Image 1 (cartoon, rainbow, N blue to C red):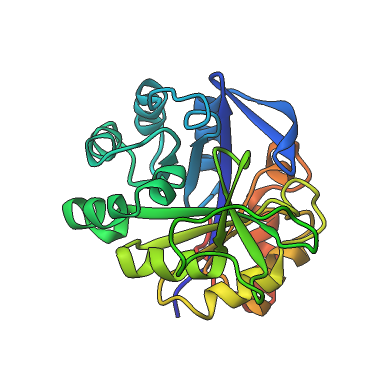
Image 2 (image 1 turned 30 degrees about the vertical axis):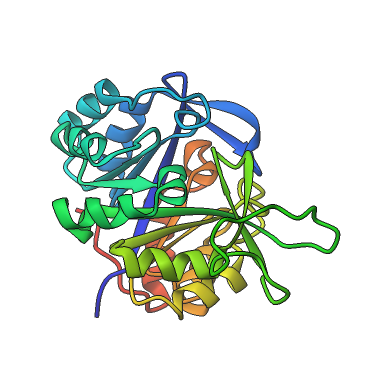
Length: 271
């Protein structure tokens, strides 16, 4: 049986790790290189490093930070933010990242997912999806691709630019398309639950994880060990990502792994 993964996430803005609530109310959480080293020693299975304003600010990718982190880590890590081409993906992988996460660029240029997958292998291409629940009265957002556009049965809408820009794209349909294009994994974040520590959006995770043929990382809302368990067992996620509960000392990675192991969830042991 494949082990489930615990993945701390480092959201980076201006060279510092930050954490917000529903992508706002941002507060400082520390130095990315130091935190990456800490989580490696703590027994995390992987690490995700996201430059959350690179796309919205049209900045270049943070190669220096990636190189520093790569020198300290012995676990796989994924980097996202600011990559707009296969050349950018190559630079990030050459800097030491094991995987790259494409979000805004993938939505704006879906062919990039296939191109990057063909060049570098689907195993290192993660498509990140930031989504919110569709609510009655939401203003309509034009979508150029009618096969992805929100419809009467749509439940979640994709956002880009670090959660700043609605796209009019149905999250489930985009997840299916991303998998078809060659993504090796999906990083699925509920903007509604992110940072609230009240639990993951289990309905969204479950529907997408049971529809696509690739692994799904659940993100947004972890606050207690039970939330991790619910995402893995009930919603069928392949991995769980969290930030606030780890950054601010509510739980350690070991606490979560011990809790899950005691309940029969297969975990990689901590040395």
